[in-house]
Image (cartoon, helix red, strand yellow):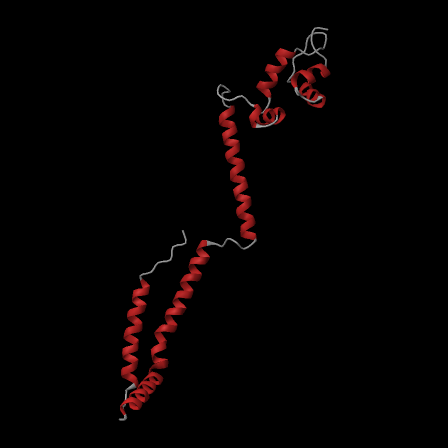
Length: 180
């Protein structure tokens, strides 16, 4: 026998006997005329024909691969690592979205805009609702302290309140919500 048996080649290459048989069926091994395995030629052919990811797994991970002069292996590993990281981040985002920890940005901005508009509308109508009550309370307080009857026009109170509320709302209109 010129070469190695399947068991000997399995021990030599660090592959399981089943992996050696798969390599044999896949044409990744070189044989002598007597049917024994040419180890040196088989190692070269197996390296050329095997996916770098499978080589990495069979050698025990990234640390087992040589670095530097490995040709395209480094760039392949970097691309594979980047893909794995990206997929993990995608899964994490999907989980967070399902748990309700993440919301759609456009939806959140629309909600903030709608709430701000509702708040503004409430403030714009507030002077008309409270002006008469405030005028009566203010007149009562002035009358109590001065002892003389005082009349404060509800319409005047409403105009003054309206002017101040609108000035405040215009100042708030310059605020911009940024969710980015």
